[in-house]
Image 1 (cartoon, one colour):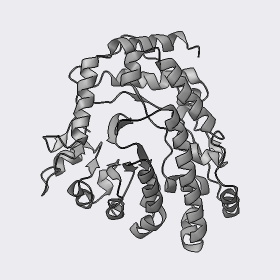
Image 2 (image 1 turned 120 degrees about the vertical axis):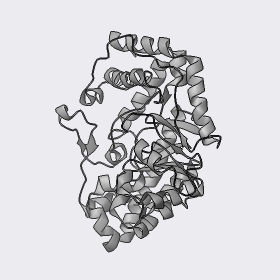
Image 3 (image 1 turned 30 degrees about the vertical axis):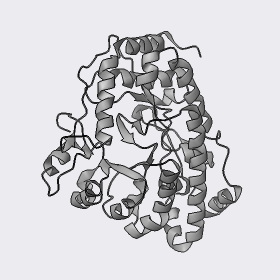
Image 4 (image 1 turned 180 degrees about the vertical axis):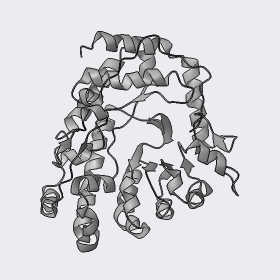
Length: 356
């Protein structure tokens, strides 16, 4: 692929600035954390040395990047360049097409946010139960429909471009695309009617969730054909996690713990078992179902973005007290709660970001 002069200069700058010794030490800190060797109650990963950009970083609007491979390279590697200048962020990129990747495969209309918002696209819910029945009857969709072809094309672009940069290839992680989790995808596709159907048509909800789960696995298998994540510790966002996949479960905040157990847990568990483990992210409130989630055999940990919406003692009792990790916990929460009875057992990670 022919890339622009700016992209070439950006990649050259990052390649030159990556210090092998620094990155190896940084990644080894993460490995020790996940291997149970953290000597502190709270884990603060930190680079010994940072490297600031040696060139001006030009902004890219994500609306432009989703339609141009070179601009997607710029968008993602701009962040790598900036993260290399921080003591705490892992270097990583992704095929960055928003939350609607999997729902778009089933025919959900892509919705691109207004340009000035500089926000990732998503999909519009179908909001038609009869169409959901038709989707179930059709089975697994074409993996290259919707956003699918863009994701796989961008995956190939990363491989082609990065092969010319040995340090980038080794230390900049291409992490798996944001496929969300089965329940989130179902809501994105179906809309609010999914919640009513949990009462009125349980079988259809389970059929749709089963189809989504099968599609998720086929899609991710195809991704993993391109990228072989052999290490059991992998990058996501700007941190590392134990396992191969990171599921999102934001929609579960809208249902009871018992409904999580019935409608989400079996499908989360199937994916985590298939890929030999991973972690689950959720926004909002999750303390009402965390006890169920914590029993999933190959769940290694959680990431929650809004601890203030949760009874954190319930969260801790069903995570660190059971040997599960919490990653990217808000620093102020971690430091306020670290003296709880039982402590954190070296299983909580946060960042040394002032005021965070």
